[in-house]
Image 1 (cartoon, rainbow, N blue to C red):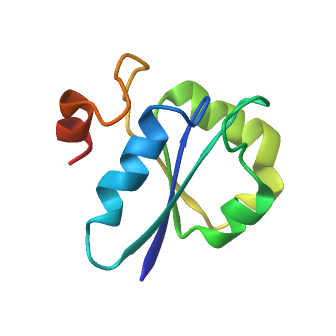
Image 2 (spheres, rainbow, N blue to C red; image 1 turned 90 degrees about the horizontal axis):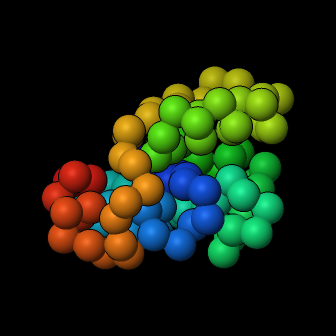
Amino acid sequence: MKKLLLICSQNKLRSPTAEAVFTEYEGFETDSAGLDRHAELPLSTEAIQWADIIFVMEKSHKNKLSKNFQPFLKDKRTICLDIPDEYGYMGPALIKLLK
């Protein structure tokens, strides 16, 4: 079972949608978090340690992740999806992009 961590800024729209979408796929466990201090569910070191693969929505998220959590990212694969902050929660266009 691969553990996927999906990250955006606030954990309100993109990453929770991605978590819901990938939960439907067999062989994956998913979790999501936000990088901002006031995110719905702020990113924790425990979440990073739990994950096999980390997905961020934008390059700025990857930079912030590296800057703030570098010691915990050793041997972690991080993938940028290049999905801008212009989609609503569970929006059909966002779901299509994620799939």
